[in-house]
Every structure is written in C-alpha cells, then in structure tokens.
Length: 314
Image 1: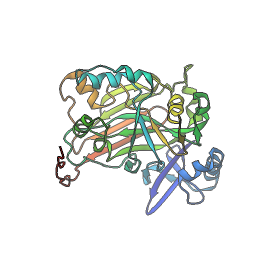
Image 2: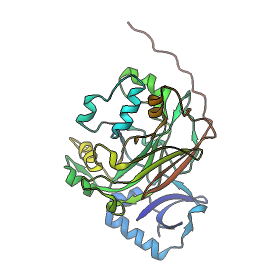
Image 3: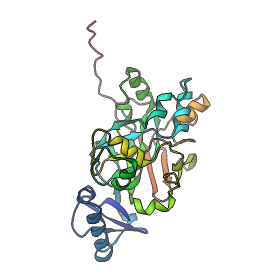
Image 4: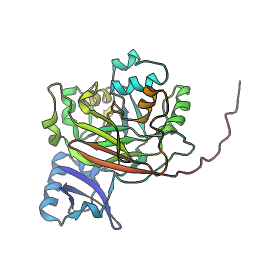
C-alpha cells in the first residue's frame, strides 16, 4: 500500500494512494498516529478508505511529507559518493567509514512535501541536492539484530537532503558535524510505500535493488541503484538501536547515492563546480523505482540575520 498526507483545500488529510487518486481515511488522523498504533491498524484504516471513501485526484491535492518524524538519522552508505566527495578535498575514503554505518541527526522540523518550493538557505552560495531513499520505523525496538530489525521497518519513501555546501564546509572544520549546512529543508515523499510492496526487489544479500535517478531542469545528472549501498536498511536500523531506542516514525536516510547523486560528488570528480550550484528557478526531480517521483523548484531565500563573531577568551 501507498499512504500519503495531503492538503485538499483548507483541510489536511491522510489516505491511501491508488493509481492517480488518493482515498482519504474515513476519520481525520495523522499517518504517524496510525503507525504508532501498529501496522494492522494502518492497513485496516487503508482498506476501509479504499472501499468506503470517495477518491480525490492527486492532481487536485498538495502532497505533504508523509509524516512528521520524531527523529531523522541520515546515513552515508554509498561508497562511490563518499569517494567522490573526498576526492574534492584531495582525500580518500577513511577506513573508519568501513567499520560501521555512520550517520548524523538532521532537523525533523525541516520536512517539506514532494512538490514544494525550496528556498536557498540564508547565506548559501553553493546549494546542492542529495538523492536518497529512507526507511521508516514502524515499531519500537532496542539492541536489535538485523534479522529482528526487518520487522521494525514499516515502509520506504524518497528523501532529498538539501545541502548548503559552502556553509557545511566551514562548519565541519569545527569537527562537530553539519549544522546550518543541512538545517533548512529536507524533502520527504511523495508517499510512504509499505515494505511488502518492495519485497520482490530484494536481493539475496538483503538489499533493495531499485533504480534511482535525479535530473536538474529535465537533464539527468545522476543515476544509481539502491543495491549499491554498503549496508542494508535492516543493518542500519540495528545499528541505530544499539544501546538506545528506535521509535515509530523514525526516519533512516540511506545517504546520497553514487554516480551523480549530488553535485558535490561531481565537483570532487571534475575538480570544478560543474554542473553549477543550484540557483532560484532550478527544478530538481528525483525518481525511485517502486516508490515514485518528487520534484522541487528552488526559490529565493532570505538574507541571514547578522550575528557577532565569538568573544575571544584566550
């Protein structure tokens, strides 16, 4: 099943996507609330919507992020992406990357819908996209094995981790991780596809073998396959649960795919800013086999509110 959150007129609703229509749930409810109640409750509500409510054309709604996640862990699981970006800094893939699936926590309040406009972050001169797939946790767990973790993933969606590369580069010299470079927008959508729908694409090693493509203004910039990840989503979920809890609605991003999954990788390989950074008017379109398509247009942002430099105490 495919579950969407959407705005139709002044109403915010959730429902089941069927072909080019969406069937609203019978009663107003957030998708996250149904996920918390459990997969059986979610599917039951979906079945009732398919048989009991009048559908609305997808063309007539504004797709919202499928859910408001309580946390978003964004991983870095495509070796080709890591190698390409590192090359831009005259570096290589660190051995520590191979030891465990590294991630950072990004802003859960920055989620935007599949076709929403994306403002340039304040002070950004090198705006970039990142093509990813995200798993959504369906039930709580702690210290899970990868085998156990499979039952804790309820579905998948597309994630675009918009990145202010110049801000990110300066921030990470402090050695604390990205902050405002990754803080203003993350596209999540177009909907949540339940895990069972993607099972036919699973390889013997446990990877989802799905095609990924990204285009800027209609021109393909990158393409890869989810099966090129270095860890499965189940292994990522198990690692996330190590020594702590993962909860319903938590989002686990795959990290940027390789072969042009973001501009920074291509800049690292080419040695120049080619293709150029995103500017207002550019439209970034991402398609993932078995999930769908998201397409966002970059618009003007706001000027940063000035702050003083640090008060030096030494």
